[in-house]
Structures are given as structure tokens and as C-alpha cells.
Image (cartoon, rainbow, N blue to C red; front, side, top):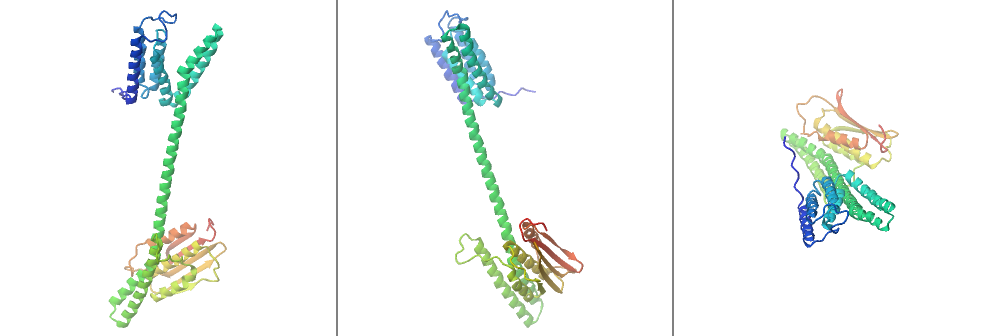
Length: 393
């Protein structure tokens, strides 16, 4: 298997290496060095040995981003070699850049260790030579080590911390934006579901009555029956159109002359039942004793459940009496709607099945219980709505 290829150096690092190499060659060409010839520390005397650490250090600059630790280790060896030659100031400057790059671009462990190591070397380079030589000028060794090693390392750590903080802030901002977008999407979805429920509950009853009575008017050759059916059709058409206008008034940004309709309450159950009787249902309403004051969400849900149940009875029930009963208990409102149930070839008006889903969702939003299904010879819809938020039922 072929070895992985080394990433290409960053273009800025290539420029830094070229500038450093050319600057070092310029200093070398004019004879500038950090130590004079013949000094005791200069073990490799002459002008030419200065070029070897210079070229190595310039090559290490190419690794300052792609391999910062390798560049620092090789650069340290090159700096050590430079100290036994006449030396080049440019080589030392490039080494400080390698220390800075190792902290800034290296792994987190390197970023933590390099400042500590250079800091300890600076302290040791200050104390040990002074203790041995007893010469105040020996303190300059620690100063030089601090300038060459600790200062660029500390600078790189500060820049890295600021960069990491900025990146964390950017990520937090992106996460906040994503959460806001998610909340917005959820709100739009919930609002669409609510609008779908309201549209279905407000209009389905009238359209079902129109479909049933128009079928009767077309199938019966009786002028009086057709006239009566057309009267019911007109009444439900006008009522359905009014409900649609009110819903549009709610949805519009600017309602103009259309005012949003007030949420229906249980006081309107009588009119709702009367409308069902007009459409041909034999309905009885039993609210028992006074239900008293109820939370607005509970009243709206109860009204819509009764409305949808009567619509379903109009479309699907067998001939017979439909009963609507509401009972208030200590902490809940119980709703029961029963209608005759039997086998049918097809419903008297088409349905989508969304009515049961809408009722179940309304009850679930209030934390209540809902059942709907055949109970002997009857179809029963039962719902229990808690009157206090979070109450178990």
C-alpha cells in the first residue's frame, strides 16, 4: 500500500520561507552574523557553515501549518547547529516563527506544552548561568531564550485562544440559528395542522349536508322534497361560505373588513344540534346540570368534537337517534356521542378519515383521553378533557 502523500504547503508558508531564505542570503552576502569569527562558542568557523542551518530552517517554514511539530523539532536542531557557527539573525527569527506556528496550528497538547517548556527554559536560562558565572551579563541568556522561545509561544497561545473562542461563538450562533429555524418550522407545522383542523371542523358539516341533500334532490322525483332539499342546501352553502370567510379573515395578514371569528363555545351547542336536526338527524342533547365556567381550550375542543361527531353521524350512521351527552366531573369534562351503527355499502357522503384524527389530536393536546369505535349496535365517540393543565385522566 502506498504511503499517504504529504499535503502541499500553504502558499503563505512558501512566501515566508522564500522571504526568510532571501533575507538570510542577503545578510550572509554582506557579512552580517550574530557572532564574530574566532569566538569560543563558534566551533564551526567560516562563512559557509552558516548557510546549512539557514536552508534547513527555511525548509521547516514550509511545514509550519501542515506538520508544525515536525517543523519545530527539525528547526530546534537547526538552531542548535546555528549556535556553533557564526550564526544568522534570520535563522533565529524564522525559529521564533516556528515556535509560534507550533502553538497556533499544532495539536492541543502541543499548544499547552510548548509555552510551559519555553517558560521553564527561560527561567532556567536566567538562574543557572548567573548562579554559575556570578556575572550579571549571564542574565541575558535567559532573556534571549525568553525572546526566542517563550514570547512567540505565549503569543501563539493567545491568538489560538482568541481563534477558538471566535469559532465557538460562531458555532453557538449557527446552533442558535438552527434551533430558531427548527422552532419556526415546528410552529409553521403546528399552525398548518391547526388551520387544517379548523377548516375541516367548520366546513365539513355544511358540505356533508349539501352532498346528502343534493343526492336526495337528484334521486327523488318529488317537487316538495326537492324544494325542501334545495332549501337545506342553500342554508348550508351560505353558512359554509360565512365560515370560510371568517377563516380567511384569520389567515390574512390584514383582515380589512373581515374580522376573525370568535372561538365557538358550548353555548353554541344548541344551535349546532338544531342545524343537525335540520339536516335530517334525530339528535338529543343532554348537558345535565350547568357545566359552569370552563377553560376556553376545553370549550373549543368539546364543541369541535361534538360538531365532528354529528358530521360523521350524518354521513355514516344508520337511521335512528343520535345522543350527545356532556358531563362535568371534579377535574374533567366528559363527552359522549352515540349513533346507530350498522353495515353500509358506502357512506352517504365521502369522507377522508381526517375527522377522527383531528378529534384525537385535540384531545391529546389537552392531555385527555379519546376513544371511538363500535359499541354493540352503536358507534360511540367518548372524550375526557382535563380542566386543569397536566391533570391525569
